[in-house]
Image 1 (cartoon, protein in one colour):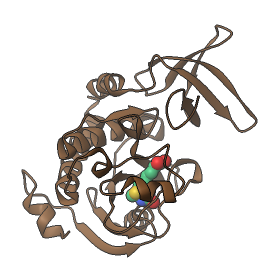
Image 2: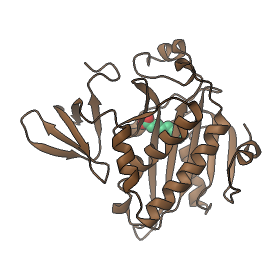
Image 3: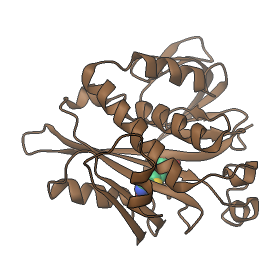
Length: 265
Ligand code: BTN
């Protein structure tokens, strides 16, 4: 995959750099470094392989060569941090749209940042913020990993047999450059919606794509867990849960397991 190939697939020409690497630690780390060096919004970093691919909550993200798209885009939203609470959810909608178009199969979202295909994890989103010395938001990085060509055997070998899938494992042939171009377009639209306050349609689409709403869930805390049923997603992409005792709560961060997904019974 080359940056020229990705550019040739874009509907409109763009300014921001597209950096395509063979191997790197983490494209999110690269994008953050570029941000601190002054790179403009829209700069994209893609790698064929990551040696330290990261997910939420400090998890590793499987990042083998020729098997997935490992993509990060630098954003510079002129908004305070509290307005960026929905960023991960917004990116999940943008990524689900792009993946669905590229793969031709319906892509769902498990709260908050997992892309789901046929009940298994197709990919994930890791958003990170950088702050200036006055505590304002200097930049955000939207990191997206999508499993394209892993086989079931490869997931089993990595201990992810119950959990993960790829477009190839579900019978779809997907081109990484096509997906990268679609991600650039969708994230560009999302960034515009974020700056202009036009994110309501994204929350609606998130609800439509949600595989979490209506299902029994387990909310994981550092010390223990609670069970209940997911009722809704609010406009800030918080998960509204009715706990088993009847009390309602909105989960904004952390981890929620959905019964029936990823081997949780
Ligand atoms: C998750 O599953 O919790 C999020 C996974 C995010 C993975 C992508 S791959 C490109 C970018 N670089 C990283 O190190 N992580 C993200």
